[in-house]
Image 1 (spheres, rainbow, N blue to C red):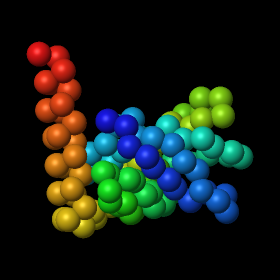
Image 2: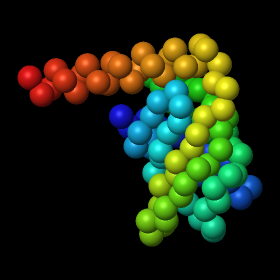
Image 3: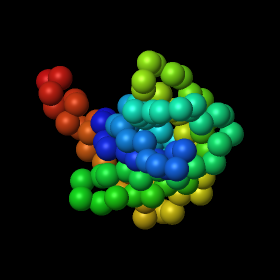
Image 4: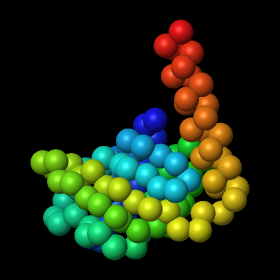
Length: 103
């Protein structure tokens, strides 16, 4: 499921899209500059889900540099229940849509 994502970095914002998403964490491919965040870096990402923007706090657990893009894995911390519910609904909807296309 690909959703728009932004996160603060090096005095600005990096933007990209999610590659994988759950209430436990996410992987996102972003357009980076400078050095990528190291594992253990606390951050907050903003994800656009339908018409809502969700701000999610967490910690970078892994990063891979792919040329000018970074694949960042983030573990989420204490996500508010309303945010977790919205993410679950969106993920399950994407899974249903994927299965419908396979039939």
